[in-house]
Image (cartoon, rainbow, N blue to C red; front, side):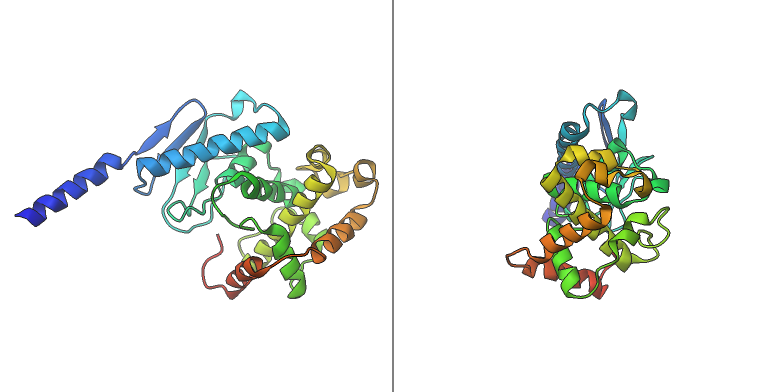
Amino acid sequence: MREPVALALLLLAGCATFQPELRDARFTLVNHGNFTSTQLQRARAQLDVGLSALERYIGPIPARKFPVVVNLRPGRGVSHSYGGQGAIELYWVHEERAPIIHELTHVLAGYTSANGHWTQEGFASYMQDEYGEDVAFPTQKVAHGLVKVIRQEGSFLPMLDVMRDRGRGKYFGLGTPWERWLAYTQSTSLTRYLIETYGAEKFLKIYDRPVEAMDFAGLYGKSMEALIDEWSRFVTDLPGDTSAARAVYFSMRGGGRRLP
């Protein structure tokens, strides 16, 4: 009789830690994957971290943006937020590799797909890498190292074409997962370079705008092409060990798992 009793106690303990929803004025987290209360609280804490960080960059978030709904999903699907226009669908939660702050950035900072993708995806991944606890897709906190490896391996996408891609028509779509990852990664590295070299204020003046409307000469004192060359040289000449970035690169290139 001891084994059935022990099993029943374990099941009761599991039920006691299950929390179907976590709700307040700013965020509603919905548990779709039998996540524990601790896991929900952890995700909620990361949302607070992301919100505080974003407000340092873009200022106070309008009240109309809240509450943000976050659906915590089981499995290793593609996290998304419907182009920043809907609820956040968050995967990779159990693995603690969920792009929580990435998707929050889309929702709160804005995302106009018709204007392109590189600034929006680059900034979201920059925020995830810089402030997120989870080591998440696409760059896993080694954006510059990844681009260095991408160049060494001959996989570098023409950055001007990446910047001109709209409506996920060429590189950013789910139908081309390898090119999608490359485009996300290059965009993240370029965004990091612009923010850390020239400041976030200048970057935010080109954020979520069509590439033709970006005044690179007025803001940066040089053309878009010159900035890309400058960034490319910077990444290529970076010293240090790239073994971690190389491992990520070949994991993605090998196609051993679905790209998130």
